[in-house]
Image 1 (cartoon, helix red, strand yellow):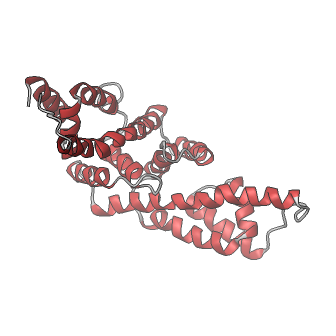
Image 2 (cartoon, rainbow, N blue to C red; image 1 turned 135 degrees about the vertical axis):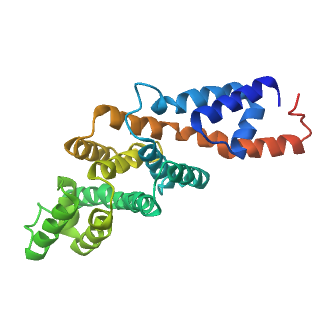
Length: 256
């Protein structure tokens, strides 16, 4: 390792508090790039940006990395370790994973309105049907458990009440038994909705509104977005070690 590489590594560990094999590959291939990433990814820890405590920051990293649209297992492990070091408990992290597991319902959030649009265009639907007593019960339970109602649930409840009731029970578990504050729960939703691998705009706006309602500041929400913004580095952390292996196999001397 050159003096320059050692300096970059030492600075990275000092700022981010962690190191792994994937960073070794990037350090070997392009220390300037790794240094720039360290500065980019450390913004949430800088003075004037430090709105969330370290444990909550790690929850946001876990949510983004564990989300079904990303599934970056090395990052999940790294940030679970970091969350434990920051004082998190297994039950708190499981709650983050439970919240993140609701992402799949966006198939319905996106799909049902399109279905309704097609039914209208084909003359198979003229307007929403009134809710029956069972549907009103389900709506009331969702509102009580989740603390809000949004119009994008209306058509799902109308057309598929069995699914919506099952989803209500599923998504309500961390709200009934969890220990994270409602604000932190909403920040978790923001983290995976705003991530580049998902970008679910209707949910993002809703959960920002909910988070603000629970007392979140603009600085806290921006910090969640800052954390989500760094997942592009996984192109390098995934492919960098492969590049090192294949370069060596092809006869390149990476130590020059």
